[in-house]
Amino acid sequence: MQAKDIMSTTVVSISPSASVRHAVAIMLQNKISGLPVIDDDGRVCGMVTEGDMLLRREIRPSPRINRSAGLISEIDLKRYIHSNGWCVADVMSADVIVASPDSEVADISESLQTHRIKRLPIVQNGALVGIVSRRDILRIIVDAPTTVLARDDDAMRLAIRTRLRSDLGLTSQKVRVSVEDGQVTVGGQVESELTRKAVRALVEGLNGTAGYIDRISVTDL
Image 1 (spheres, helix red, strand yellow):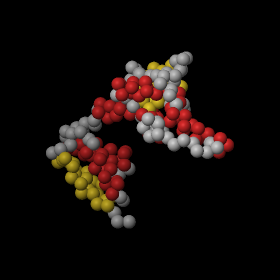
Image 2: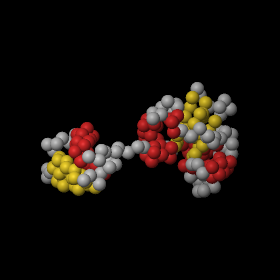
Image 3: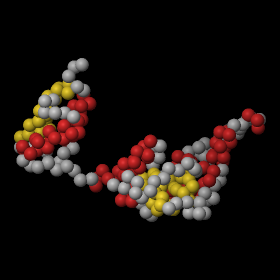
Image 4: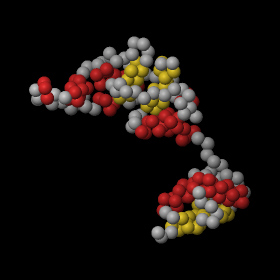
C-alpha cells in the first residue's frame, strides 16, 4: 500500500508570514494538530504543530536573558525568538521530512515513529499534494481483511501449523496443534514466555476459530 492510497488530499496549510495566533486558530477550527507551511513558490518549507506552541510566552513567560551579549549563545537566541516571535516562520520546524505519493505506507509509518512526528507531507514535483497522518495509517488496521480459516478441523489444524512454522519458526516437533469443533489446543514446550504469548496472539488473531486452549509450558533455562 502506498501513500496515495490513504493520504488526505484536502490539506489545510499556512504561509510562513502568517501570525502565530492565526496558525493556532486554524488548528483549533479544523481540529488538527499541525499545518504544513507553504512558501510563495508553493513548496513545503516547514511544519508548525501544537508542540511548537508549548513554550510560547503566552503560555509560560520566558525569563529575560540576563547575560552580556558575549555570553549569549545561539541556542539562547533561538529559544527567545521561538517564544516571542509573532510569525509562523519563527516557530515552525524547517527540517521537514516529506514523502512522495508512491512511498510505501510501511516506510512512512517507520518515519513517523522514528522521528516522533504525527504527519508527513506528500510532495510531487515540489508541490504539496496530500498529507499522511497517524490516524490515516490507523484506519488500515480497521479496514484490513482478517485471515479466515476453513471450517474443517483438519484444514484448520494444517493452516495453524503452517503459520506457526512460517511466522514463529515453531515446528510440529516443538508444539502440537489439535482442533475439535473449531476449538484450537496448542501444547508443547517453548523457550520463553514471550514465545508462548506470540503463539496465543497468532491463534487468536485468526478468524474462524471457536476458542483457544493454551497447554504450552515454558522450558526452565
